[in-house]
Image 1: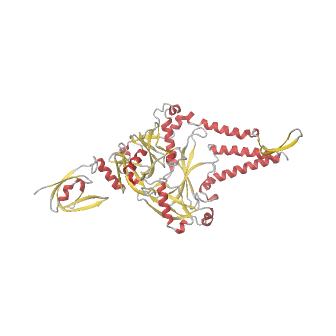
Image 2 (image 1 turned 90 degrees about the horizontal axis):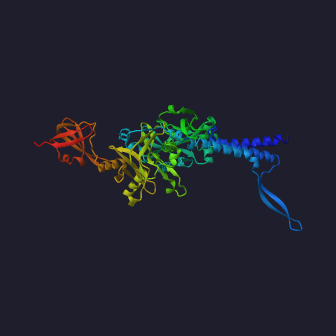
Image 3 (image 1 turned 180 degrees about the vertical axis):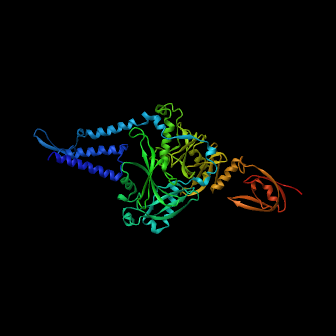
Length: 559
């Protein structure tokens, strides 16, 4: 019994530590999860320690030592920290084995395999990113601005703000063809959860990055949320259903009817035991009922927008860009090596100088696509192309467009209004009359959006700013000299008509002329481009050359 008891105590202690760890951190019970192996080493250490302690062996701790000194043999005592590692070889060996296995799956041995994880197709910028993907599809608002608007909206609701907080984890989604940011409310502490868990969380916040407005939307009580405790916690609840899956990127979304859901990505390690990473599916949680749906990647519903996180896509593209010609090439020759645009967090937070990927969002084809520039690894201030990647499917497209990188464009926009001290947000990319163009917002020190800016990618000295997106693009087109440019696909026609009436209408600060003839046909022209039409009167006969959208040429016929 004396030999069995220490073993039982050691085993129970190890299981207790392991079980508490797994429940607390929701550790995936998957051999491809390195955390599980580290936990195994910790449990082995605990087993040996308790086993030896139960047998009366003390391997480390403070020990009082009595020592005789001097000719009279006086006893002097002092304390000494005793530590013995020789009995803990097993957990140390296990950690060393985990490190060795991790090295086997590293890019050093598998560079080409890493480069093949993300499939990237070359695409044409002008045809693929058409002007139909206009400024209303560009989400220019950063998370910090969304947080400010969301907090302001909730702050006005006294019955809500006293019990709940707005989660800072805003998600960029496509909602019925428009980009919006969404965030669920969260319990403001343990006791607020105790008081409200029966009814759940009854709302979420939406922020429109185009109109710069926020609204509070009511919903049925959400029980399974990340801010809840114990087994109402969304992450822990999902772990109890799928304890062997590696789940990441738990976030909030709504479907096209405004119903709330939590989405988490299912990831797999694809190289050796721990190397490589990709998404193979997702789990959709109804936080109201607790109902769960598991989807393979090809079956994910279209309303789900974020399965591949932007950070993961950027990381996979860097593998693609760096390792196509082997690992040693990425270190020395660096032939053909490229990476996504990065910035140093230390530029804004002095304690961190780690390069971080940055990207913008575009709502396209009912999905959210991330946009980021691609640059060579030489560290210059220019891009060699752009990456557009679908956050639902992982589809990635590369466009060869050389020009200034995002940080240079942001500096150019800030320099346009340097006397105001505004700061530019990370830009997105749009197509303006075939010209790759950065568009961004300029914010004041309080985080409020003050201006919009458009910067030409290839010539970043071409900059315009305005108080609205539409006005900014109009001024930008004027700077490029492309206003009212006739599209090749639009055929021009010429007609001789008699003026019945003329109307002048202001749109986004620009005056447009609407000419109605005696046959009740309507022709449109911009006043600044057709000043001679300002002299026309009712009854005049004119010869008009026009296409489907506007007047190209107008000439008065003298009687």
